[in-house]
Length: 412
Image (cartoon, rainbow, N blue to C red; front, side, top):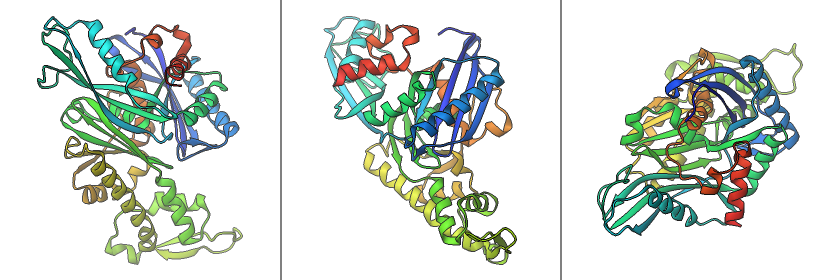
């Protein structure tokens, strides 16, 4: 890994688009030198629905970060929040004949494992080795130099819809940017927000975005499961707008200022002003008890965490997820969300934030910016991902399009 270089990250969400530009210093230390975030456009539930609007928002966010950093970027790591990601654990085995295991044998086994992933209208985004086993022994992270008759690997394969990926990549290409890496949002957020012990012993990262809630389970330092639920903080806002007959902008304001995921006895005695939908500015606002607002918020968040629990139970990795949950994303900052998640998931829950990333201001160092910070961490250390050999040899300026081109030729 080269040091003293410039890297960039772009988190394309349904509510905001965030860009970080950073310098990688000696030893892999990351310091953010430019940052920008602005309202998203043309993106719903993590999927591009209006290319022109999305391109304008992306260009604006990147340009503002470039101005702050005093540099120009041509290559950028991008988060994937939509695309209906699916994950599976793949296992492959090869005979090594009792000799010392060589690096080329490990790479060949990883490549065979990648090629065995079933793809039908989907593309392989991540191929993360969980561990290697020699003659059925416990998993090890590096089998090279060890002796045995057979070598096997367990790998987490994460795929997503090819069409939705292509649309997102086209938007970014039209902004004159090349994609160096495409990373599932909760995977990136986990790299930034989880401490090493949480990644090793088992933890679940839940990213509560505006249009989606995504999750990733980490175990033995690797991602073993990822999924996305098409429900997020934006749905809470729309529920408030409908329930209180107020404009969406006012609903978002009420949620931020007065909302809570838990009801309290005092809420019945506190009245809040609610601007009416379609009324003139001079019309006095309606007044409702705060308890009514929270009675709208709580059911939607309860539904979200119950869906998360159901997905984890059906995934088959619930036993690996441990008792630790880390919440990140803008919607996780709603008062009471942490306690509600703990009640429904029956786990220890804490709020996450970007760790080990220097240069973040207080406003951009919270849970809502963990994914963008995690993208920077992924660029510096991609956790030993199994890459396609041809993609590794592609020119530096080929970027992610070269890799995707190889994937498409390989899979279609």
